[in-house]
Amino acid sequence: MIFQNPFASLNPRKTIRQILQQPFVVHKVIDKSELYSRISELLGTVGLTPAESFLDRYPHELSGGQRQRLVICRAIALRPRFIVADEPVSALDVSIRSQILNLLRRLQREFNLTQMFITHDLGVARAMCSRTAVMYLGRIVELGPDELYQNPLHPYSKALLSAAPYPHPETRKRSRIILSGEVPSPTDPPKGCRFHPRCKFSMPECASVEPNLVEVAHNHLVACHLHRKSSR
Image (cartoon, rainbow, N blue to C red; front, side, top):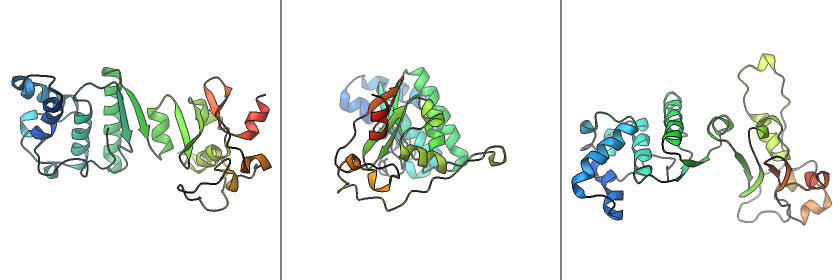
């Protein structure tokens, strides 16, 4: 797991050496004599070099970007196949975000990792992910490859993408979709389709029957009664 806040996810009373030793000690995968070389190798992998200058420091002595590199270092320590990255760059300065994203992409290739990347930033999601799932009130409403950004099908996906800033607005006109109503409580969501109270395409069955994800194009799925009818 790579957490959103690198400072809160690290024990302030432990040194970097102690933090990185813990996975190996708990799981007993290597001898104690190998700990130093393995930890030094990990620190070099995430760009915290020379390792000797970091091992006996505490998290508060690192910058925000360095702390997040340490969290990533801990996450890959036991060579996992799957990592959950929960908003891993949202707490960082903009100048540091690209460095961390490039690091995650490099590790993905080198360690053959699968990453679940959770983010509110559509640009980051598109850059990092081969498949994107759009969620509303805890349910996936659309799932697809890069085509999702070019041809969104669910009304909520369309509204999200219409709100994303475009780097060259003078060359491309975009009509903003403004949703009506308030976001319902996640603990007491509407019956049927959870988006129907704010959807201008809502039909009577949307208020009573929750739609399932249906494949409407190759690897492109959408949970919407409107598209379920058109795909029959």
